[in-house]
Length: 198
Image (cartoon, rainbow, N blue to C red; front, side, top):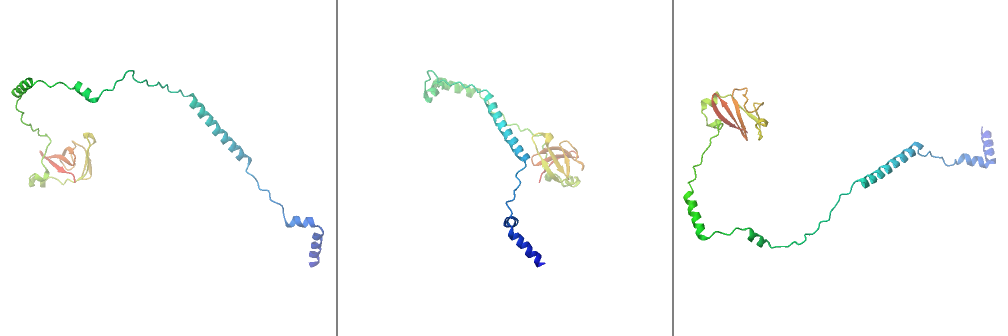
């Protein structure tokens, strides 16, 4: 076996070019990017250039706003503010005319009418101020949530976890007359009363 190996070594030594080729191979050629990638990049560049040209053409095609120069006033005069106020202020009446006018005003002035207190038709006492018999006859009512809005149709209240609007009768019996900011007005057995929202 060693004889065969020695013969092979001798034959390789006799051919120096062949052994160098086998021991040191040349540089390996690496494949470049595929041709379709170059074509795609060229198309994208072309599209960007076309869009830029179109934008420039559109900007030139827009009509320019006509601007007219503002001409200064021909003979503008500046007057002090005190002069203008003096011209617009009415002259005070003479003292005699002022006293006569004050006398007429006092003679024709009537005493102010007494303040009229208008009671709201839906105003109601608080539930706590009513008799204990009425409160015991009333079913338990817990206000869980109250939503007030300027428009009555947007208001609602949750009583015992049920939603009610103004004018509806509660499941427990009372009628909901009005929803106010922070309270509700109810009617039960002919008695109106208010409950505050927690």
